[in-house]
Image 1: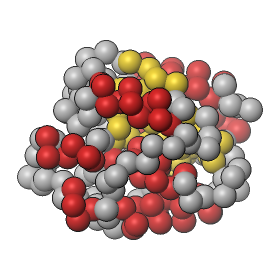
Image 2: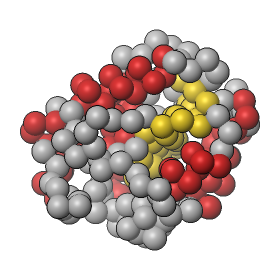
Image 3: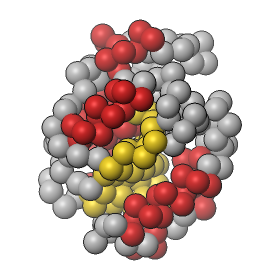
Image 4: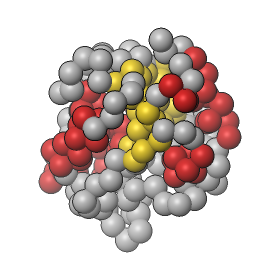
Length: 192
C-alpha cells in the first residue's frame, strides 16, 4: 500500500500531540490523514477514548491504517478487540505507554495519570487482528524496553528497537522524526 491508498488515522496519547509533534507534522503532510480527537486529553477514560477511535474509524471509506503514539497505542489495542474485521488494515504503534506501571511515569504539563480511574489497565495481551509494528525506545520513561518486548510478543508485532529516543516525542527531540516516517513507509509496503 501507499499513503495515497489509505486513510491514515493518527491516535495521539495522553496530553495529545501538539503542533510540533511528529504525528501532527505527518498529519499535515500526508494525504488522507486524520486525527482522533478526545474530549479530555489529561483525564483519560478508556471507554471514551476507545469509543472515539471506533467512531472515527466508522466514518472512513478507504482502508484505514492507524498510527498511534503512547496512550494512543493502548487505546488502539483495546479498540482492535471490538471493531469488525476489515475496518483496519494495519497499526503502526510507537512508544507504548505502560499504564500498568503508570506510577513510574513523569508528571506531564502539571498532570499525573490516573491509573485506577482511567480504566486502561489491564493491557490486552492477545494477538492483534491486524498486521502491526511496535517501535520502542530503550530509555522511554513511560515504558521499559522489557515491557515493550513483552507487548510485541503478545500482540504479534514486529518490534523495532529505535535506540535511546526517550518517549519519541517533542520533549525527547523528535518533532519531525524522519526516521519514523521512513519506517512507516516500509510498514505500509508490507500491507496488501
